[in-house]
Image 1 (cartoon, rainbow over the protein chains, first blue to last red):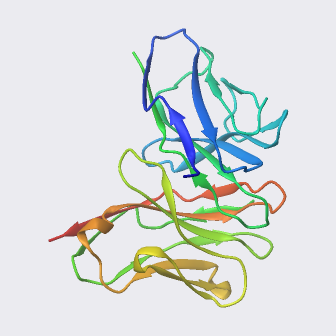
Image 2: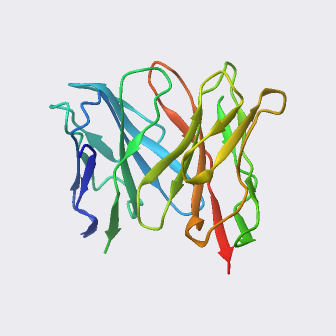
Length: 113
Length: 114
């Protein structure tokens, strides 16, 4: 079955460490997105990529970095510069065609300890 | 700037009762509108979407939504709620057909009373 896989589901990080969240899709979608979800704040866009080797900052990119070396993969690194990284992170992809909705992964919950 | 407002943060309905979740958007052109549902600790699942044409859109799980341009609204409805419908619901508007970016509302949490 096609879909998006995010791993790990739960991640704990010590302050000052970088961590990388994995996002893999086998839907052959060109566009991929990272969102951050906090209680009462909906989803906020961190980064997005419309094609391999290209990506753009979203609304809250500070303290995060991404890469898009393969169509299937769009990993997100939460750096030590991110002031408040504890959150639920969602990856999504979108196929070609105007107005297509997103397919979401099941999310990664990151906790800084 | 584009925006989405879901006026109700939390709604409680009795099982079997009808449901309407409100969504208002601000967008300069014809919007692409979506409703998603999220169970706790899970990703979002697409319920339905509107691009053009018939303003009443049918979705999965018995949900429907009506696009009203004059009111800038895209409210989600269900005639009879089931306990399994308890979840968080997000309305989203397509910000740009080129980038495919979606802007999400704050979400409405639905609680279903037995």
